[in-house]
Amino acid sequence: MNKISRFFCYVVLILIAFISLFPFYFMFVSGTNSNEQILSIPPKLTPGTELAENFGILIGKMDLFHSILNTLIISIVYTLFAVLLFSAAGYALAKFEFRGKKLIYGFIMGTMMIPSLVMYVPLFEMMIRFNLTDTYASVILPLLANAFGIFLMRQNMLGFPSALLEAGRIDGVGELGLFFRIVLPNEKPAISALVIYMFTSMWNNFMWPLIVLQSENKYTLPIALAMLDGNPTNKNYAVIMLATAIATLPILIIFMLFQKQFVAGVMGGAVKE
Amino acid sequence: MKNHRKGHLINKGNAPYVLLAPTILIFVLFMIYPIIRSLYLSFFELKSGCYQFVGLHNYIVLFHDRTFYKSLFNTVVYLVIQVPVMILLALAIAVLIEEKFLRGKAFFRTSVFLPSITALVAYALVFKVLLNGDHGLINYVIELFGAKGVNWFYGEWSARIAIIMAITWRWTGYNMIILLAGIQSIPDSLQEAARIDGATARQRFVYITVPMVKQIILFCTITSTIGTLQLFDEPFILTSGGPNNATITMGEYLYDNGFRYLKFGYASAIGYVMTIIIFLLSALQFKATAKGDTD
Image 1 (tube, each protein chain N blue to C red):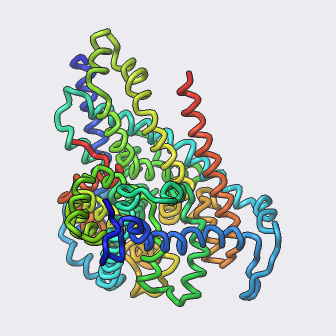
Image 2: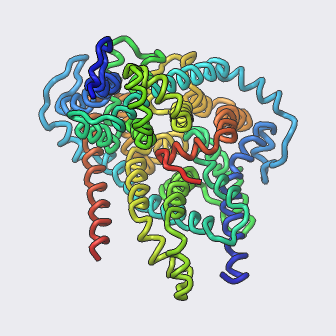
């Protein structure tokens, strides 16, 4: 490539990077400005001094503490269950030969093609029947039927050395012992990718929690955000942007710390670097 | 060697079933049952708390329902415009980032990927402020260039374009990362040989990169198609389906019927029509790729 097209290439990429990053900057900076400053033309784009003021208004309008707590509990419990279930399932599908294996695996993968929206009506009906609406369990349980998590763990377990398992068997380690004491400790990279993937997807989830959670003190952050925006009285964009920033910050920090696992999660664990 | 050792209730023979049992239970309860139940419900109508069998009534009503057609039309618009634009953009960015001379690869890769970690509700709210018709920054920039600002959420097409822009911002990096891995797996020797033979960058892209990552492009296209057909969060936040249902998606229409008006049967019928469309489109995409292989 000659100099001109190289230069052009940089210009395009810098522009794209700017477009990708700017909304983050805007969201964080707007949380520190007043509503009037955001609505002035052009909007104020430098950090301001209204953060404390905005925060005060925000906690008056939205049950921030409960929303964070709810989202945190739901995401953590969901992730714990997902890790246990999916590593066991992935291990079974990767390292064993048994009758019905192809059928089970094919079926689980096939469910990826079915829109989850189709299931929401019967699931909602089910939650009503079991008196589970408005509980953490109603959010967590149905979303555990997640084919991608199983796929991710299976792909990673395929390469697990069978010799290690055989050695364990000869030493008289039981099958569950093999799983908990040999497989799990050796699959930390795959598990961390799964943890990040599951945690973020639950933290960000909107539609299903919106359907089953009804009382305000049970709302997760995305629902609380939508309600804050949906309330037309004294709409304050500074406050909305601050709430959005608060909801985004934890995921951003997790991303900065665990970038590799994040990317591995997106690609079904097949990351090479 | 015998693996059925004494003292272990769980042996090598039954271990996979034991390990899979909880997952299978979850899938039967929360996946298989709802799928079947939904089909069943689509033949019923909820009347004063009781289900009444109505045969194909829900489907017949659906095929005459203008709002449903509108939601189908909008969803198809998003699909036909947004998915190809996004996949091409993602592919182009991935190719640029893989160029040998480029410095700061990690920075560009991370920046483009970053939008895909945000909650759909969160980024939709940011775009709602940025696209504000009277005070939004995007209109300010447009007016700087001498053009007239757009009242984004009040015109049918401008509202659709606003949603398309937002989704593209959120998902391009996600697909870019997947495509990047595919491009990285192309052996360097192949590109090198083409370069020595005098192939231009464009020729290498068309004759080496694209054919080598075709499967991954297919994967991205199918997952994006399924995602777009279920689109809900963004139109819900950005436009609430308005103006005049101009941006309503099938997902929103299903939500309205199922959970606003509690028409469980009708919502189930919408869900099944959606499923059929997804199957048809995926099959079509598979076929298109397979056909290309024999050329």
